[in-house]
Length: 283
Image (cartoon, rainbow, N blue to C red; front, side, top):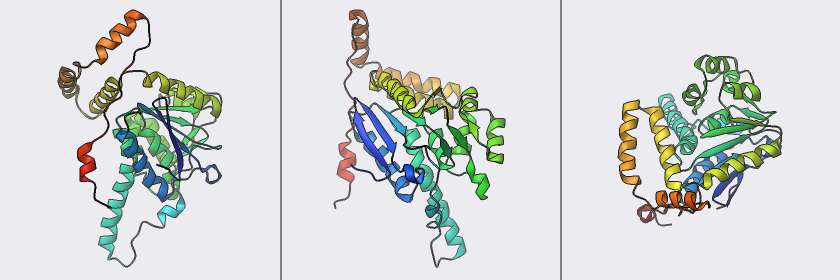
């Protein structure tokens, strides 16, 4: 499927989602949000995808929400209470556009250059890992336009860096540069340039893609579950998960590959969902 807001391709089990509007600082139009949901639905339906990389073009990763979107949020000629209820449902819809990243079967790596502003922070907090170029900076910009960030930053960021720092960024709207983001653990690694950033993140993606996709998907499932539940709940879940998932062909293949000093070969997952296809409405 072709997309307008970004270029999408799959090579060697790696899906690349590359923002392609550098002349507009890769601002997030309404089409961008709609397509983000669509591309992750496509990722989860493809057997040949084991990891995804989100990157960008031009001097900035993204300037955040395109101003044109704000003008489309209020339905005309509606009673005030009904406008507010409608707006709440729209905000929940925008949240889901990035929650699909967090909920994706595969790990999602973000490669960030230049400005990651407003909605950009919402997006990258939903990714599994973040990497950036030396010129990157992060800004919770919503405070400067008189609103509270509402698409995931204030919910996910406190789990990714110290609470006091999150509050400072949220209350002041100041820029957090790459070195500070690395020092507090928000980004995994800094690369000297945009070119080296993309190259380095793709190398990491290739390493992930070479592992068994069942164990990768299970690891993401367990990490997300542990984040949202108690240690006891998480231990119980992994015991139940592995009681079923250890009976695969992947472990014998991994052992054999190690013994034979060769690269392991793992089958792709079966991502196709016949029931979901059968439930799709006819066109």
